[in-house]
Image 1 (spheres, helix red, strand yellow):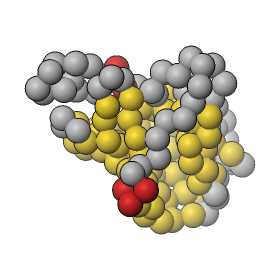
Image 2 (spheres, one colour):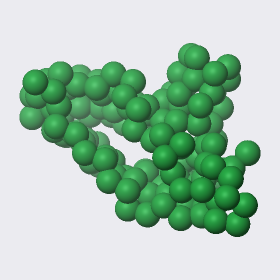
Image 3 (cartoon, rainbow, N blue to C red):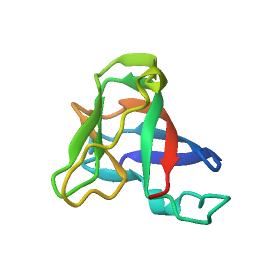
Image 4 (cartoon, one colour):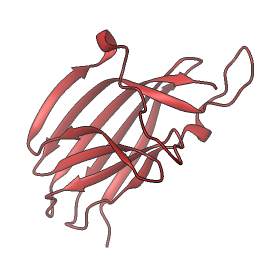
Length: 135
């Protein structure tokens, strides 16, 4: 059996994408699971260029029992955000200009999730507010 997970696109516009992710764990957990695939986000409405990356502008989270790590996908994945177990908050990175993807070699622009300390019936709900880029 596997964790029961969902991904929902709340909005995907020219500059902003808002995505919601949920997990109800059966104790299996997630390890470097692709959650934000920038190639599936909408193209720039003016230039028609594909989305090549995102910056994290906000995170709304409720994690019960388990923690979650968000990684920038690359040859060596880079930790973007660490969410501790039993944590609920709304984090605004906009005043900082967003969390910019600082991964090095093999950087894809995608975001991966890994759960930590997961046991059966642990849950998370994460909403990411993302600023899109078109290099």
